[in-house]
Image (cartoon, rainbow, N blue to C red; front, side, top):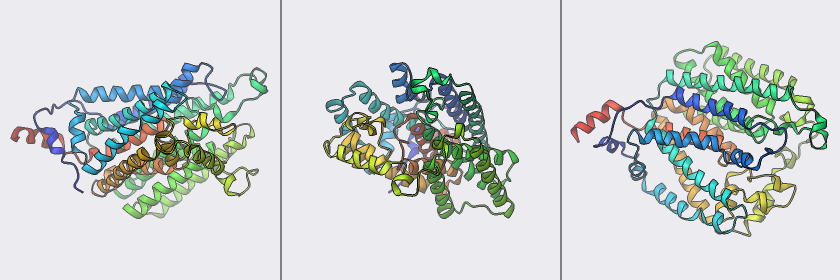
Length: 443
């Protein structure tokens, strides 16, 4: 299949304006990370206020920023219709089928009503945001990538300090239910420590691939190794095995598909030193001896159920629930009300395929996965020719791999990163602004 013909964007309505730069995207992501950490602070499994908990579950701060980016794009002649027409026929038909079916379960089956419908609307906002990123992003170059990485690392450093303060300055245990704090739920702005670790895994994949690209072409600075150590330490500290899976898949794709690897012995030694330092510091800082902050807890054993964190039995329960609503699903958050305790504590199935199935049913799942698969394949094809997009591809591969074991396409902070990756990578197929203006004059 041919790539979309983006030259038609230039005809008639193109207006030059300030583009959305990569450093600004980094500031937005880090700003949201810190802002949500300040707003959504709790020492229990949920916020004390139901409306605030709904805002946290739906990721409303992220959606607000996405809407702002869409409005920004509209001021620069963003045309969703034009972009829709440029999508190749197969994924366009798949998306049409998906949007024609995915609302049925939330409307007629879900017991959560408005919140399920809101989540479906948010899915649509995410996709329009992706198109707006594609339309608005500036040209990608190494300086921009480096500055974006710096913004992400600074954001994580500030957030790590906020998290440390949250653990140190906790309320008295006697003021808490059952005189205890469940530490894995107190990460500022995140519903659990695992989701925080997954976020760090996506950033780590970006930083690692960018570092290896810099080694080949412009040299690596000391602070890049410091950023990598910080990110690795937060992954290990959070005990997020999904992040280890995601970063492993991202590196394997970069190595096998794009020949991105350490070229010098000193680089291998430096990266190894980063990982060893991260492991030592992270394991020394396990909060209050809580085994939930260990990649492999001594008490877990080595059974498949233990290694999967209880997911095998949970996935089985989700599958049985899906079989009662096989055609159109039961809407987002269905696992929360369809399953029995203690499994009903989870708001999503921790697996992208089961999430699609129980939320939207078989027909919409097939259509949605076909569109996602096409977009993923096309992103890899584009980066073969435009290698500046490799850090974003690594982040994308990491998040998609993690979606097999967690809710990367359910929670807004991770879904937003996926859409940014797709939008930036597809923007690499655009002609630059000078070419577009020239095309406009000759059209």
